[in-house]
Length: 247
Image (cartoon, rainbow, N blue to C red; front, side, top):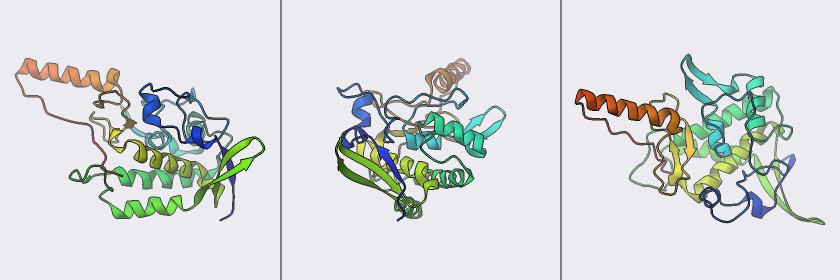
């Protein structure tokens, strides 16, 4: 493996429990599992117009595709959009932003999406995805990188080493995905709204009952639809956010 080292926060910071932080448990500000210098609250790029921002890195990568009134949109259609995503993800200046990196990140997104695509094995909550090919591909991509732990004069240090810098952003997203699976896989949800392209989020609500990517958008539309059906005397359709069977 040809090393391409990217420094991470200390292990304690990089492995901080996302769910505990999101629920308000004591600890540092919410962090993503990424390079030092970007740890801390991520700020969306002003040019990032996606409907759902600020999710953990793995889900944020999936959310680079979304439905719009004019049709499907893809932030990773070109290099300009890819650089916007890197900026929003806190990776600008740390990961390559060229054509090879864009292609690698798009491939990673497809592999990640395949692990979350139906059919889910709902009889085995918390177990592996139903598609073994998707699991093998993600595992193959994870093998392109590794975490290296070192003791330096400044204290413990962690770096990511990948065999090709183009895969760094994608590898970090997959590493983040594994952390989510190890923390609370049942909290990985897709919006219950009528999206052709699902928007994914980590349910950080205390009761674990979040259904919408945005209450102001999908949630209010669902309420209006229920109200309209009641006026017409119709029975509302029961719809729930997709829950992931992984582990």
